[in-house]
Length: 573
Image 1 (tube, one colour):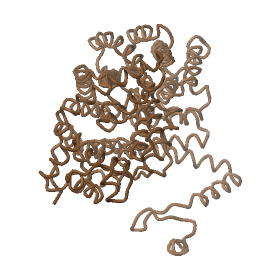
Image 2 (cartoon, rainbow, N blue to C red):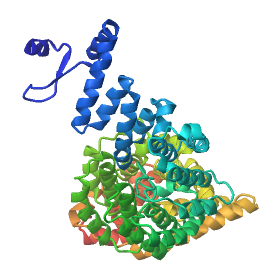
Image 3 (cartoon, rainbow, N blue to C red):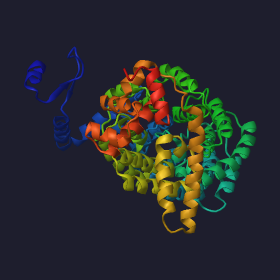
């Protein structure tokens, strides 16, 4: 029967190559369940209970909870969910936790209020702040009602419950920007009970963000607020660390501080904080902290001119990251490796990632995969697929305006500007750059601009010239001063690093297209842009774009240096 059904492709799917295991087609399975539920509802419920018991005995608590809920055996489901919640937090499966808790009646939460604590933290971390506020308020009222607290399975946990609510409500006040919230939050931490979810590191503040500063717990990229909050909280946490064991959750705070200081171009302070975060996480191995911390560490070392260190770090991490069972962080790891390859002008590495990354410019974009899609924009821009890069960058920009952090919005605007510059759309490019500058000036962003290098500097020069031709006012003067400061930062760093990426000859040769080699040969012969345009039957602006791309690929900042390096590499032969 199985062979016949398989040949006819009816009702079933094989699950292994040996044809030992099969699964019903989902629609057929749903039909069978519906028929059973109508014919014998009691038997239907009993089967779910049996399934729940069997899965629980096999250590498969997620499946056990699902079947217990289907059987309306809420007490069993609540007991199993209380055991399963730490694992769900550790692996970032918060949407599943929230879904299961919502399926439980309120009285089951009163019996096991620890589940409600997990639920509230899950709402906070996933950005559902209004729901979290109302849930915390409900739990607060519950702790004041003796009739309800008498239902608790463990009466001794009431003080613990009140302490956790204090921490969560004050944490919410911080995220909502309420006055005096950081101080109150610190006081709540000082009263933390033994076994706190926060203290033990079970509260995983980062489930899917390569840049913690841009996440909701990182203040959505508000540099000044994040700097103030984590800087004022950090001394109190150090005091707590001396009295409480295994207090690792503030490694999140140290990582955010490292990202803040890096963005402010305070590299020594950033290095201090990121090392502290990594030391705290040595035993815990929380990749939601470790990988963002290592990302900022590679950026710091690159900015300092230590170009070999980032690749050494990433090579050491590679064998570890491939062993973890969280595919999201594996994906982020290789996305950042590709960004480093672009910086080092390793064209073959970028193309290799493009083949295996499973992302395309036409895919639906989600905020959780923002880092990978922005990397795809950078790869397309690097490989001169400017139109696809721009189309994707604009779609990402729309999403980030609604859900992203300030730094993410700035980066998307910069990339749109660079794409439009490459497509010879100068006015549109300057509009995007201005939008990025206005947002960056308000918070003091620097490295997001500096890291783009000489390509962005050229656009900033155009922006300055255009702004000087317009009537002056206070806002325009402020943006011009900010633009000038960033140009100086880029010039200083580019001047010291323009020859820092040693490449083998084949990589540099492969990086240039045939047309770019033709242009380079004519440049070397002393022809002007106009003469080159006439010789190759292209526009002058296209010639300028080719020369700009040649300089970028050869890591030089002038025609003279491009010719000298081309002669050295025999590119003109």
